[in-house]
Length: 362
Image (cartoon, rainbow, N blue to C red; front, side, top):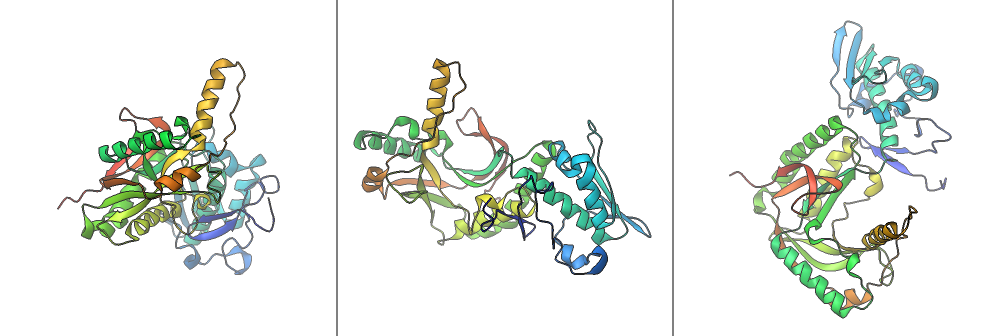
């Protein structure tokens, strides 16, 4: 890790620095964690208002809560010889009980005051997030852009590019049925986390999506124009279609997807690693990854060795020159998906774990 440019992690609207796992079992910079200079590790309740958990009062001097943590992260929370969980318990002055191996139970936290319990919840959430960002993502929130008109125009675009732009291979193009906008990606390790993501998506629809779009329904999204992810048009990895509103104020779509992203990020499911100032709204059209995946399949069929093809960029300068303002058409925004990565349904789109309708009921 470059110490001058440390990896940052945003959780509950606070910024933390990720450390090397070798040097810190929790993988997080914990100093000044609670932003409190109070002596003896006492915590001000105002500092922890953004910790979202239900806390019950057991009696006059005890408060408790329970939180679900996937078994995949339990080892990180407990730590080597129990040192991590012991440190959290000691620092927050709480009694923390974790389920035994094989038990399908929540973590329970008991403390003498609400702020101590919340502080322990935050510390556990930090450890989970540090572990989660190391995992390959399993799901993503997506907006399908595969209407019949869009697919037809995309196939025409593909045919023209293959005819007019030598060197561009068929395998670089996305499958038409998979055209989409990615709002954000996440790693969901068990059914409880999938249910949590489902609830978050429902809440996002009610709190942000529908209120923002209600004056412009049906809300239409146009794919028009081309751009690419890197700085050299002769060495492109991702070439994409640009997004714009059709019949609605400029920037409304960006505002909406950013709100959905922040909603998931605050809950700890979407990570700042894939987000800067705004969600990068785009519809991927060509990706060098698709070609490398195809080569990997072909090589595995002719070789007994488990080889992995290297992703090689492509020269997209001629595509950009000839099709810079290509209009793929308009899609009516009817729903938003919690999609499964690398799993395709019978319709050719990513298999959904959940679909939220965004059509007005009025």
